[in-house]
Amino acid sequence: MVRMRLERTEGLVFLLALVARAMAAFGMAVIPRDGIAYLTLAGNVTEGGPAEAFKSIQHPLYPLVGALLGGTEAALLTIGVIGGALGAIAMLRIGEAVASRRVGVVAALLYAVSPALVSYEASTLTEGLYIPLFLWSVAFALRSMRKPGRGLIGGVLCGLAYLTRPDALLAGLAMPFGLLLVRRWRAGLLLGLGFVVLAGPYIYWMSADAGRLVVSRKKSRIERFADRDLPGEKPFAPGTPRPSVGAAILDTGRTLGEASSWILLVLAIFGLSPVLRGEHRSAALLILALAGLEMVIRFKLLHSFGYLAERHLLTSSALLLPFAAAGLLLLPGRKAVLATALVATGLLLIAVQPRRLSKLPLKEAGRYIRSMSGSGAVVGHHGLPRVVWYAEGEGVNLSAGPAGEADRIDWLVLEESAADTSGAGKIFESGKLRIRVTRVGR
Image (spheres, rainbow, N blue to C red):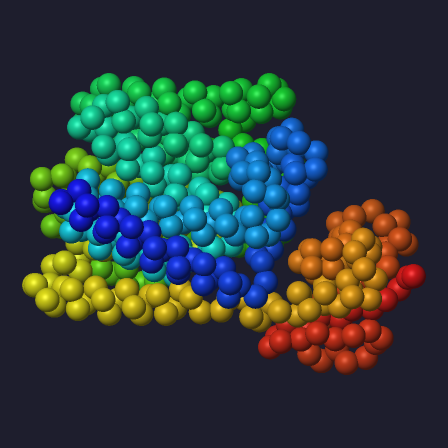
């Protein structure tokens, strides 16, 4: 009877997370800019085989899984919707290990409706695969404190997360060390082994190809944390001031608040004390340390390189959800239930709102080109790859490509200010975004 009740709770949480992400995916007006790279790579893998996934600077697992499902936009969205929903069950297990079953259920509920998590998981970005894998690896790491053999599963899942995004390297190193600190020797060694078995071959292959230790072909977080510039890369443009320590701290905190919708961050602060005083203090400290390490590295990157976005602190905000749940449950009896229902409902309404409506001119411009020329048109642009994607054409970035490339374009796409009224072409606009499409060939 108890087991059936637990399974029913997990099923309801999964269903809520699934519906929220499906609605968000359906309401996404335009795919995110970075999603173009993943869609292109998944398409390349579909056509050219698995080896194509290893030719990019992106880590290979996401395009490989996307290609297995067909390599389309719908395939990548499906990964995020289902993967994100499975992450809700992982959050339930984490909350249970950190505090109690009640905290776990509320934490999973908050995860299911958290606007930032819903938004990024229900998109053509790696978060839909990475965050669930990361959370499940954490859940098994916590479980290994009582059942050491689960550490191997946690390490393998963390390795899979690393093959999705380089961010998981931090957890792959920190979690075994944390388990060793609390004298869970076997669990820590097994977790480290599982991670190395999955991540090691990929690191070896990249390092052999580069002739030096490389943990990612993307901008290395480890190298940046050590204040070492990558070859040919400058941390700031000439004349750009370096953020002060105080400004970087404030901006990191602000970004974490945005990723947590602020209310969840405030609740987490209230929930810290009761959780850290509870009987699962070691597990709570491990979770808090992981979230803290992530924030420290993000602060360092911001301070050194001036770059930080909401999506970069999603894992930290997710790890704080058990503390937010504990903060809600400080209220007595029915007040806690009512407050949880109100917070969850408010967050859900925000999470399922249509997104990126202001970017619709990008889609409209691309579809206009496709309707006029069919697929395969050569589209010249200045950093507007989404127009090319919706045009089903070949893009030529006139800002970065060779000068001779301009001679072969069929369409020119420009982003203009509302004051630019002269010139030929068709205008697509919404709010401050104004896209001019001009036919220059064929």
